[in-house]
Figure 1 (cartoon, rainbow, N blue to C red):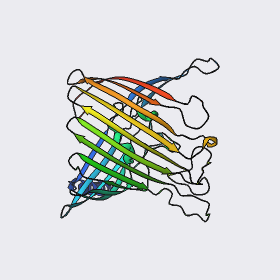
Figure 2: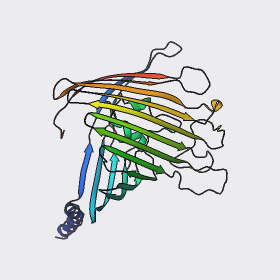
Figure 3: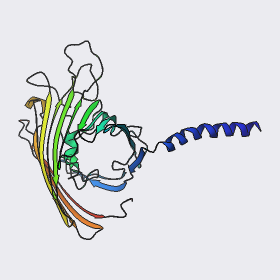
Figure 4: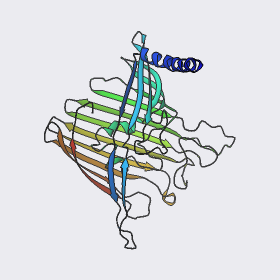
Length: 330
């Protein structure tokens, strides 16, 4: 009898939170389960040894999220989101609560939204939809958005603004504060990120313009989301920073789609520090052979680093794919 009472008490304790969640009609559960089997082979080494082949199962940015909104009246609402990366292929580092875009804030139909938390930069978000191989092995992020710290990133400690749709035009901006640690050293530099974007879409046409500046943190005692550059600091101003801007355009109809992105990265790391500045571009096209089948092709090129070395540091990538769509829900 005592065992039954204990079991009933445990069941009741577990049921109360479940009922509370069920009563919260404003909560949406969403996610993506996307796995693939990949095989890669690198080129021959300088010593003439055959390249190494690696086979693996990839989780491809699989994720699970909760989000919601609460009407506060007068066109104002509270918004929130908790998004978690799910490594379907293994249980290694990266699994954990709130590892992806996670935030809380306020939103209004007439002025947009203002949120605090962890978020993709507007620079990253502005053209991700133009990457026909997004979040997969042929993603253009292997060559674009690169730098000492990088620009296609999801920093923590971020305040983000997104405007409403203004006749097809949207703007976004974010500021990331970097380290939250205190330091007694005046030599320490606290990193920060400023990111801005503008997007326009009307009918089959779309366009984007984005800018981002990363002020890289000190290599001394301050640590945090915006760390020291990956190369030795040799900045003319004493503060290491890197900047990037890009412009993009796309055209999409039922039968096909084409996209193009041009990017320029600069920094003040100096030639002896191995500057990461370069130019890159991306072009892609998709043809819908049937309502469920599409053929897609993309080309990405990153030109040589402008580090004064004169060496061949550029790279290029061809990507070819065939998509077969199942149901929209699947």
